[in-house]
Image (cartoon, rainbow, N blue to C red; front, side):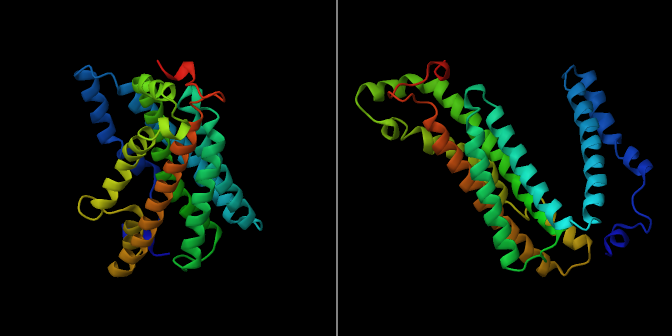
Length: 265
C-alpha cells in the first residue's frame, strides 16, 4: 500500500507523534479546569480508553489477518460488533433491556444487507480486512441512531405517558395509541444521520473517501465509493432505527393493554 508514503512517512507513525497529538487535548483539559466546566476527567478517561481499545484492536487485527482462519475470524468479529451494539442499545434505558434482542436482529440484518450490497457490487474485494472495516463503518454509524431512538422513546413515554393512557382508555389498541409516538421518536433519532448525509462534502470529507484519497485513488473513484458507502449507511441506520423504535414501543405496553408503570414517570 502507498498510504504511508502519501501521509508523509516511510516508517509509519511513531509513538512520539501520537503523544504530541495530545497537545489540543491538553489545551481542552486546561480550559475545562480554568472555566470550571468539569469535563476534564471525562476527556482524560475518553483519551486513555480510546488508546487502550485501539491498540488492543490493532494488535488483535494483526494476529487475525495473518491467521490461516482469517475469514472465519473476520465474520466472528462482525458478529461481536453487532452483539456489542445491541447490548449498548438496550442497556441505555433500564426498562428497555429486552430491546437488546430486537436491536440484535435489526442491526444484524441491516449490517448483513450492507455487506451484501458492498461486496455484490464489488466496491471492495471480499477479504477479511474489508469485511471488518465495512461492517465497522456500518455498525459505528448505526449505533448512535439506535441508542438515540431508545432514549427518545423513554423520554416520550415519561413526558407524554398520560396522553397514551388516555388513548388506551378511549379504546385505542397498541398501534393506535402509539401512532404519534413512533413517527416522532423515529424522526428525532434519524435527524443526525440525515443531516450528515445532507452536508457531506460541504463541511467535512467522510472517512472512506478521505482514506482513498490519501491512498492515491482518483478523486472521482473515491467519490463513487463514498456515495455507495454513504447510501448503504443511511439505509442501514434508517432500517435499524425504525425497527428498534417500532418494536421497542411495544415493550411499553402490558399484555392487557396498559402502559407499564415504570415508563410513565
